[in-house]
Length: 307
Image (cartoon, rainbow, N blue to C red; front, side, top):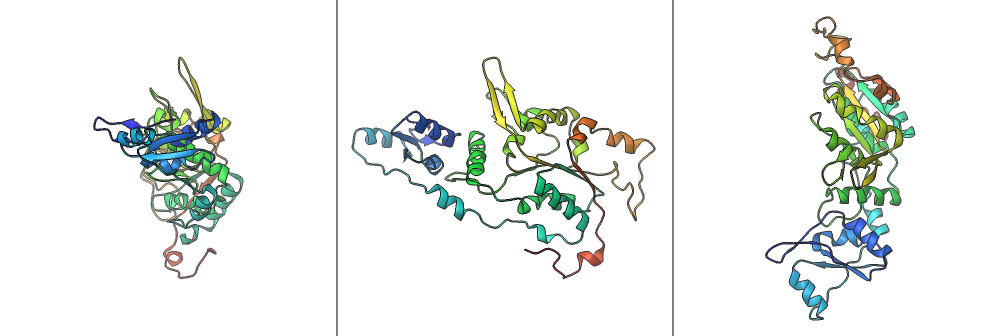
C-alpha cells in the first residue's frame, strides 16, 4: 500500500491519519506500507507490517525497480510509551491555598466527574484547571493508541511523533463554532470534544460561549461519543472527556466578593447566570465556589502538597 501527497516537483508530503491507515493495511493483509518520511514513525507503531519511509517519488520508483533498498522503520511501541511518560510543565502541588477547591478537583479526578469553578477574576480558576491532568491516572497503552488515532485523523500530531503519552488538555476559545467543538465539516473531522477524549476539556468563561454551541454538547456528554451524519455516510467519533468549566459569578466578577463590591445593575446577575441552560448544568456534577487566596498563604514557603 502506498500513501502520500505527491507535489509537482516529485516530493512526497505528509498525510493525516497514517496510524489508522497502517492498522487497516495490516488487517487487509498487505505486506508493507510506503509513507512519507514524516509519517513513518507514526505508522511503524503497527507491528507485523513493514513501513518504508520515502521523501521523493524517485525513491519509490527505485525501490520497486530494485535499484535502491529502503530499510523498514522499526518502532518499539511499548518502549516508546514507557519512555514518553515524562514530567508535566505544570504540577498540582504548585497551588498554594484553595484547599477546598483542590479537594473538589481531586474528587472529580477520582471519579471522572465534570466540574464548574465559579469565582472572581484572579482567584485561580484557570490555573487549577490547567493542573488537573497532572493528578489524573496515566494513560494505558490502549488509551494512548486510541487518543493518537483521533489526533492523527485530525492532523494534530507533530512530525516524526509516535504515541500521545499524556492525557489531552483542550482549551478552546469562547468564539468557537459548534462544528469546531463537536466535529463535522464538508469532510467530517473530529472536534475539540473528540480531541479531548481520555482527557480534559476546559471551557474558560462558560457564559461567553454561544448558547447553541453549548447545547450541542449535551448529547455527547451523555453518550460519550458524537455521531456526524451526512447524506451518504455517518461517522462515530469517541468523546469520553472530563468537562471542567469556569465562570465569574456576575458580569463585573465581584458578586459575593469578601472585599470588593459588585457594580452590576439589578437583574444583570440573574441574566448572566441564565446564559447557561439547566440541562447542561445538570450534567456538571460538582459546582465549586472559588474564593481569592490571602496574601499570607501565597507568600508562605511551606509546601502544601506532596510531589
